[in-house]
Image 1 (cartoon, one colour):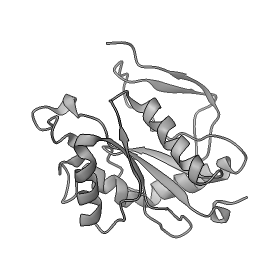
Image 2: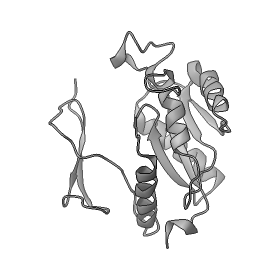
Image 3: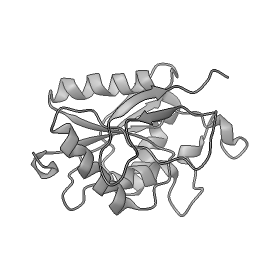
Length: 187
């Protein structure tokens, strides 16, 4: 099955983070994902824009995971760039990424048992959207084979503040099997 056979991908935008690492530019009341650091859009808006339909890929309205303090910012920022806000799920308390992804999965599967989700942090910069969409299309071919897919970049240096993926082989131009995920160390 090729990616064109899928109906729609549901983007899940993770936008509940407090952005404390960039203080004072990023504050609890207005964290980094909602700020304009690069260009005329916030990181959140750029993430949402990146996950809109293109040739060969069809995206549904985003499903945004956030907290109660940011729900109105989410709606305002999506509407400002012409994107239908879609469902906004409120995290009762910040519990990191895994519970937010689980909540999004449960919600999406209740709507459509065969939903295909693309989970994306809302504070990343990905300037080459066409290349990103090509990677998504490649990932969809793996999804059609019943596999889960994760995207990553080749590191340029050792960084102990982040977890990493241990791969079975070095990636070339395709998908590579994952050997293990190494979690970041406790601080």
